[in-house]
Image (cartoon, rainbow, N blue to C red; front, side, top):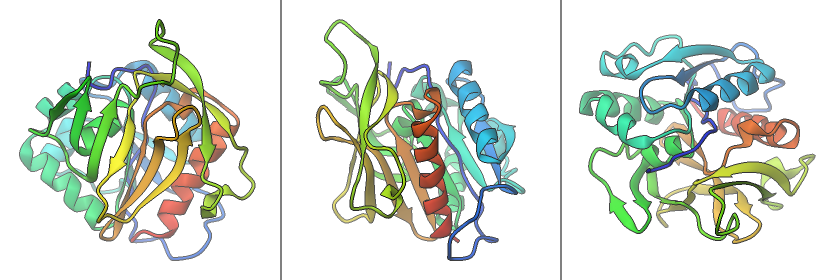
Length: 249
């Protein structure tokens, strides 16, 4: 329940060293991948493979990383798919506050499926709305499972995502591209936020991938699982991360 999936999420970055302008590549950045309770191993494993392909250094992190404030040397943090209640329960209120503050100071938070549900101020699951214990780094709702994506008898399928043709990242990217849906949400930002819809579900038009500014940092959320689909989906994620990094810090 609450963001079930067999995919992954992405990460967090400390952007003090990033200057405005095009990043040639992502080599030299370190991403912390959350592997604690709730993170499905197949999700985190696929994510690690994608991040290494991008040139990122990958570090395993857990709830204690935030609860005791051991964030030095981490540029990005990634919360993968799985189940969001253990994320809520295991990270202390102090740990959540420390993570939100780090993002506001320039880090990049990346979350997929359950990681996106956890990030939102409110997660709506099968019509029920939950706010207690949420991280709240994303100003808005994560609503799941997103309706109308798979056939009624399916929990998982490959779905087409359409890159926003008016956005900076669109140039050179394949659109639409395929990503894996597994009880995944769509993202609904508050109107007052600076939020960019990077891709939507072709079948419904609902936002599937969004980037939102939080003071000096950014939040990058994906409802479905591009990490499970090499090729165009990985290219899209690399360019999305690069775009956020260029505007952070």
